[in-house]
Length: 251
Image 1: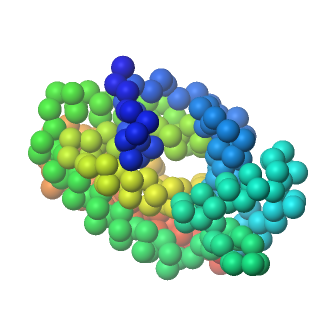
Image 2: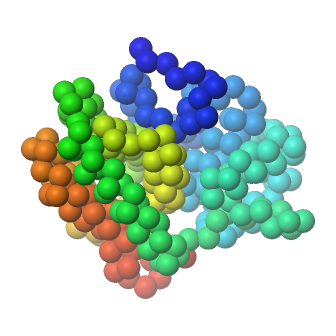
């Protein structure tokens, strides 16, 4: 099994191709290797923000949250500070912390950046990819397919993990640690909006068909077709949000 040394500055940003199959996650999804109370609180609070338990712009009161997560005020502040670095929480000086706001303009900026970085990495990866790359892509696609026909709210966390692994496998023949680091942050932000789209319930989007089109183009080494498929795929979340009926979005 390939092991990334703890000293690697991008250890958390690199894909783990040796990871086991994803099982349905509990409501309070926490990283299994959280070694400290601060890490536990960080992962739990991050998941709850992404899932929308705390609305965009909501005040995060330390005195209340320390009881929710069973940690001290200092430990919770440490977790919140890490979430500021993830751009999921905004620090307001002496006034405390708030959940990072969401908006259509924000999603447009995230979408543009993802397309610019991920599409370029995909085209290069499709050109360079060897047999091991094909195996990673095929394996991750098969795992993803098992969770998204259709994507259910109950298994959303497991699907997101498989989705991330598939996207990272696609670019793995060309991506650098910086690429993974930046795209993971952007994908984490995008996930907040994807979950909103799932909650709308009336979207006719076929996510599996989008991934199948992307997978087929990559396996045919059709880099231009794969790039177009990825651009359309990333942009569809923005289109769904833009077309959402008035009053249905939490922002």
